[in-house]
Image 1 (cartoon, rainbow, N blue to C red):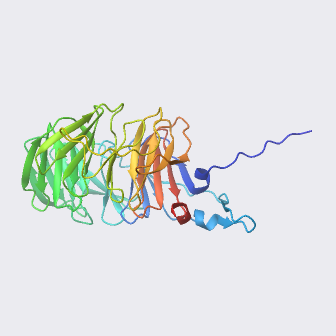
Image 2 (cartoon, rainbow, N blue to C red):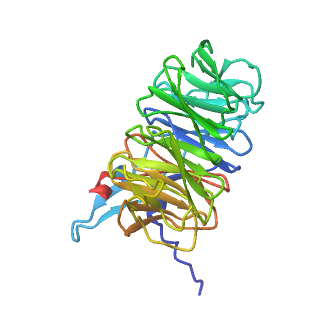
Image 3 (cartoon, one colour):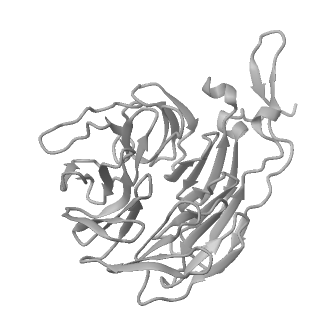
Amino acid sequence: MTKHAAPPAMSLFDLIARTWDLGSAVRALRFNVIGSSVAVCLEDGTLAFLQMKDAEPPEMRMRTEADTGRMTIRPRSTALPHSIRTEKPLANPETGLCQVAQQGFVFVHRDGAEIWRATAKGQTLRVAKAGAGPVTALSALPDRQGILVARDRVLEVVSPENGASFGTVELAHNVQRIAPSPRADRTACWGGGHVTILRTDDLTPLSEIAVEGDPVCLEWSLDGRWLVGGGRDNALLLVDTEAGEDGRVAGFPAPVATVQFSAKAETMLASGGFRVVGWRCPDLPFGDNDGTPVETGKPGLTIVEAVAAHPTRALCAAGYANGLVTLCEIGKREEMMLLEGKADPVTALEWSPDGAHLAIGTASGKAAIATFPKAMFK
C-alpha cells in the first residue's frame, strides 16, 4: 500500500506574510512615506522594490466557522509577483536608504560620490553629481525640504529634485551619522568623537558636544531632548542635548544595531541583548541615574539583532540572530512568535506607517512583508 505524507501544517507567518528570496543579504529596508512600496538594499549593492498592493490580503482570505466561531485564514491561491530589481546603479549599503517626498527613496551610489533617487516602482534618477569627496552620511528632511549630505566635514542640503544646493557648512569634525530631530528644526551630526547640533533651516551650529563611541545608528527622543546611538562596542550612547553632556550604558553582549522610541509606550528600546532592552522616557539611564528599566519579552539565549516599535500601539517586533521574530507588548513578558527561528539572522525590521504591515530582512537575502488583520490587534 502506498503511503502519502500529510502536507505540512502552515504557520501563521505562512498565511499572513509574503516572502521573496533576493539572493543577497538584506542590509536595509524602508517603507515609503505613504506605505505603498518597500525598498530593499542588498549586500551586493542591488536594490529591490516590493509593492504593497496585494491581490489576496489576509482579510480577504479569512472566514469564521459557523459551528465553532473560530476564525481561519485560507492559503493563497496565486503566486506572488516578482520583486522589481534595479541592477544599476548599485547602492552603497553603508549609507542605507532614506524616504524622500511621498513615494520615493534616495541612496548613495556605490562609488560614494553621487546621490540617486528611486521611485516606488524602481525607476532611478541621478540627483547630484560627484562632489568634493565621497559621501560619508545621508539623511532626508520631510516631504521635499531637502536631502542632508555629508562629505567628511562638509554638510550640505540639496534639492531632491535637481540637486541644487540649499546651503553648506563645514564642521570641526567629520560626519558619520546624520539625524534630523522629530520636528526637523534641528539636525545632529555625529563623528570624530563629537556631535554637532545645527539649526536645520540655515545650518547654524547651536552646540558641539564631545562624545565617546562610534554609533551604528542614531535616533532622537520624541521630545527632542535626547540623542541615542547604538554602539559597535556593545554600548548604548546617550547625549543630553539640553545639558550638553554625554553618557554610556556599557556591557551589552553584542553591538547595539538598532534603537527605537515608542510614542504609545513612552519607552526607548534597543537591540543587542538577550531580550528587548528598554527604559521609560524621559527617565533614561544617565550619569548616576539608572533610569526606569522596562522589561519586554522573555530572556533567552539568542541575541536580539533588531527591534521595531509599532507606530501607534504599545507593541514592538524583535528579530533574533537565529531568525526568530516575535511581537511583544512593551513592558510585558508575553510575546507571540511570528516567524520561527531557522538559523537565518534577522538584519532589518520596519513597520509600515499605518502599523498594518511589518517588513523583515534576513542575512540569507529573504525579504518578507507580514500583513496583520485588524482582528489580531483588538
